Length: 142
Image (cartoon, rainbow, N blue to C red; front, side, top):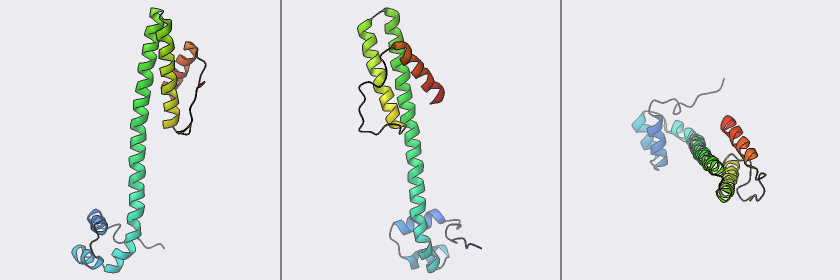
């Protein structure tokens, strides 16, 4: 049977972890929280595991926020492209297509499908219909 860390299951674990991170002595922490000095010492490596997990959670939340922002940019760029097509403004269409390509490149980087240093000059064919269907696919699968 695997022994469970008494500090990990302690009601005031967060306070114990903060005290350890602040550099408080093991004896002081043990006395204040009613655990043994050895238990606090054995618990010390568990803080690192918790910090790594907390960092991973922060990174996931940040990535979701970035992804939401990039998808919003994509929707806005496609709306500009639609308007330019309706107005028959070829120059504005080309500009909007370039912007859509840039947003798709950014989305691929944020999603981890493209290394950050990669630059794409021909990510997609500059056909507005192909661009729109790729944007529709992203909206459904993003």
